[in-house]
Every structure is written in structure tokens, then in C-alpha cells.
Image (cartoon, rainbow, N blue to C red):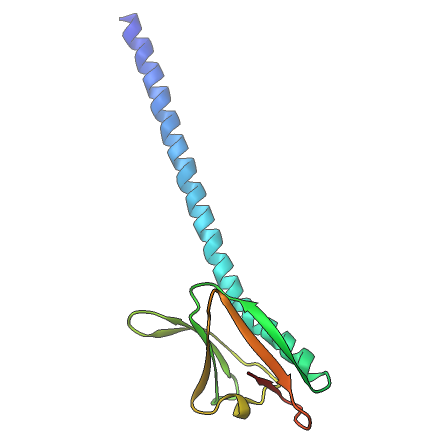
Amino acid sequence: MREKKGQMKLSFGMIFSIILIIMFLAFAFWGISNLLQKKTQIQIDKFPSDLQEDVDSIYQSSPGSQEETYSLPKKVDEICFFKGSSNENLKIIEETDEFDRVLKRAKIEHLDINKIVINEEYCIKNTAQKIELVLEKEEGNPQVIIN
């Protein structure tokens, strides 16, 4: 009888340890996935402010052009510049199976939107998680053009 009682205590301790290990691993995976989702959202939220800083830099300088590369997550399929409301001229788009979903809208100041957007929108694809833009300021035009 004594051997069986000792075996039961050891078995319960082992089972309890395994349950704790599983709980710790589940919490670690949850934390890592949550952190990666926040990183993606931060990249999306930061893009308009980074672009605005670069546009302001070109706007305040003499005529010329500058190539800029921006990192965006895989989730972003394209960015689009558009004419329309005075509050917005940029949208970040995720293409889903059913429809295009706008992840973020923003207003970028000092853009010559009429030279950038010929039709409805001017969209740039997110290839290899990077978007390359050429910011240009022409002689006689204080506004910045994106090519």
C-alpha cells in the first residue's frame, strides 16, 4: 500500500507541472502574437507622419527631388493619394477577398494633389513590404509632387 501512495503523489506533481508548463507556453505565444499585431498597427499609424516629415523637408528646401523608402507590413497592399475632401488625401488600403478595406486615412500637407492624381486616385503597391516614393519640388511651384 505504501508504494502506491507514493506513486500517486509523484504522478499528481508531474501532472501539475505539465499543466503549468502548458499554461506558460500558451501565455508566451499569446504575448508574442499580441506584440506582433501591435507592431503592425504602429507601422501603419507611423507611415503618414514619416511621409509628412519628408514632404515638409522637401517643401522647405530648394527645388530638387529625393527618393524615400518606407517600410509597411505585409497587411498593407497599397497606398492611394486622392482628390476630394480637404481633410484627407491619403489612404492606406488592405485588399481582402470581398472588398478593399481602408486601414487609415490621413491628410498630407504641402502636396500638389492635382499634379499627383490625374484620375480618381494615384495608388502605389506595397512590394516586398516597402514603398518607394520620389518626392519632387519643381522650380516655381512651392508644393511637393510625388512620383
